[in-house]
Length: 153
Image (cartoon, rainbow, N blue to C red; front, side, top):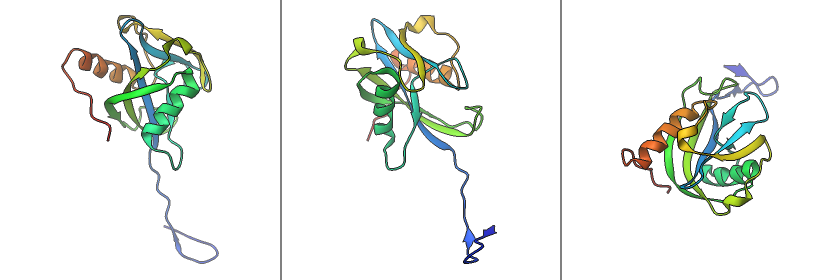
């Protein structure tokens, strides 16, 4: 353990995963919202982003949806929590993925870290960045009645 050069007390630094929030914004007619990432790693992904200090994961999810897609969302439940150390090639992240409904689906537009945002039918999914393919699979299982959404407390 390192010592502070001034007071000589032990310095503790925890190397924890970075918390994030993602959403599967679903519309029965249009499908789910995907973004094309502006930054590395490039490709298609669910919209989402980092939880800020002093912010709940739920608030981060709602904020990130507005920033990346222009959509105001209602969170319906938790699809899953994903935390494999290699899920993000940049560094270790932990995400809570929510199912959500857009209050204003026609207002979709790319913003923030997204170069494009659009609805995509569930049977027309491209390969997604990170482990988002797994989250979409779990969401499909929810729609088929094979998997519950976890409640948001």
